[in-house]
Amino acid sequence: MTDKASAPLALHLDSAALRANWQWLAKASGNARCAAAIKANGYGLGAVEVLHHLKAAGCRDFFVATWQEAAEVLPNLGEASLSVLHGVREEDMADALGSKARPVLNSAAQVARWKAVGGGACDVMIDTGMNRLGLDPREASADLLDGLTIETLLSHLACADEDHPLNTAQLAAFRDLAARIPARRYSIANSAGILLGADYAFDLTRPGLALYGGIARPEAAGHIAQVVRPRAQILQRRQLRAGESIGYGATFVADAPREVAILNIGYADGYLRGFSGRGGALLDGRRLPLLGRVSMDLVAIDVSDAPDLSDCDWLEIEYDLSTAAVQSGLSQYELLTTMGRRYARVWR
Image (cartoon, rainbow, N blue to C red):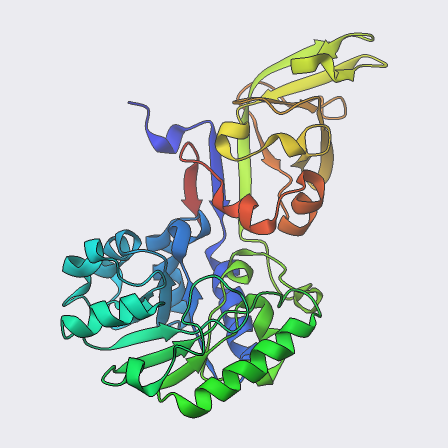
């Protein structure tokens, strides 16, 4: 089997940028503690590695989606806290009982399930307008929650990346709930919510996207650093004559002779077809455009202005998340979480 370290494509992951992003978000959170969402395998970077780097930065509160994700990171948790956002199904009870991780209870059925087995400390999610996971506020009565040891009462903002009236409506609803439901901590702000101001911070903020280089709101520009830099190896350098096309569908036809590098990356690696004719690679800060369509395993890059590049050389893929989102039509979240298994993940 080929050593992953010798793979012809790699994600260069900047641990200093990751730590600096968390530290900036922690400062922006004011007096609130700043947690970290490391679900979806640390947004594609590797949950265990992200956990280690963020613990080194000072983070002590982490969130994953499922108990399967929790099992991967628990051996590395140390004295930090871990919450499982999707709560407890019947199938999860064996893992949840006695675990250091806490379930985030999202429904009356989950509350009843946890009470029935004498479960310990938990978190509770209340829906304040997202209409996704969470108790309906009308369900959140003393009778339902009585007997629970609630570590964190949470809600989740639906439109924090926009100046939307739902933000203030959700904030008002959460304040009302916090006034009548006892918990040790209260939390509503994600990455974008932190940037809405101190009113949204409460006791704990829960950034995700911004940790990994995403710009959740314009206020973060210039403060959040790029963490992920994909690199791909040149498999072949070739000439494209004037009038010749390249790739599926012949969507690019050369109007003059071109030098082309074929790179080992494609939509099977999460570099999706939305980059066709729009994406590019970087060489010493210079942009080299992508020609034609992205295919499953390969892309073509115009290297006419890079005469020294040859087979087996490497190019960085243009992947600033804000820029790449505009190029591809994908969200910044998709750009991170669709990166496939074939990359060597190289931390520095």
